[in-house]
Image 1 (cartoon, helix red, strand yellow):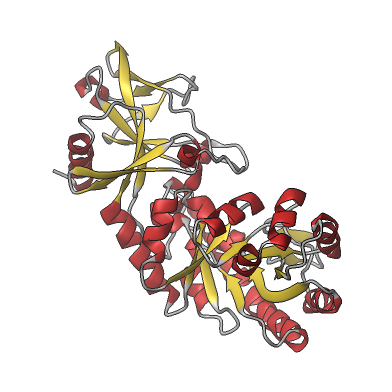
Image 2: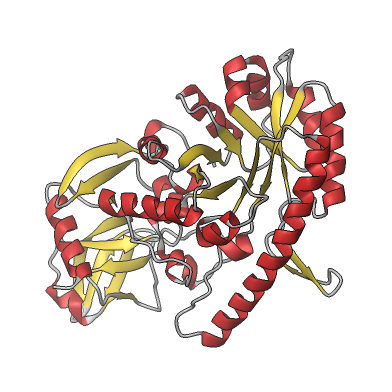
Length: 400
């Protein structure tokens, strides 16, 4: 029996008493992936990206491990909820326009001490001040550096369109603006190199593209390491008590950790290891989060139909944003239909071994987005479900 077949047998036994659709997390794989992130971080703390987990129980589990410290959140409402739930170090990774949230933050000493907000424009400070509604707490802020690689005098850009702050001088100027502004304290810098951390460099069947990606990433890493170090020097000249410099992502943990200027690493997808992380030469993880869909039809030879399954991931639309049938091995989509909102036909000779009511296990393309489809996660240890815990959605929250 192959390892994948053994996993399928375990998951089927563990959930035999449960009806699909359902979602599981294999805790042995989850913990092994967490240990690998810590190993690759080389002694620097890993801040957990909550958008890739979206389950309080699992956030608590990973933060209890040595080598992890703090959360990187994705909305202000989520940040405040996590702080009220007892998490005392929450870095909001994206600027917010949530005026109600800022009023709550500025009025509550506990929240103001636990949450750090992201800015890349003086207008963000103006919005926060306008939203204070009498709140006088000092708001902790972090500056975001644009990590994109600019070539040929800026005519070619590689990387996400995030912060407008690209040069050391630009970040130092905003740091001075924060320093002059009552009610704010600059505590950190964040730089997420998504074109390195979030783009696979080993694309199956595309060797030329893979080599081009590796060349681009090597160039980007060198350029960013030099620029990030210069940015940190420039900002520390204004704010010598800077608490952290955050960088990285699951796909670039070890290279980012090697930079002296970086004090902590951000990662989250590497805990669940969705399908987009199969295409990396820098690490190999174990799929930990899966969802199971029930076989509800057998339309013909070599075909079964499962209920639901059309759960595309965010990003530029394409086949790589679709979940993949994972267990049993050998199933594929009907190219005329793909994964559907209510039903999904699957093709392959192995389909003839499936009966009505059997489960087909899928992997999502991205990590935490799976939790927006399910109210709970069944935690599997060995061949048993040892706990069932709510996702954010199961706790009544859909933050974004």
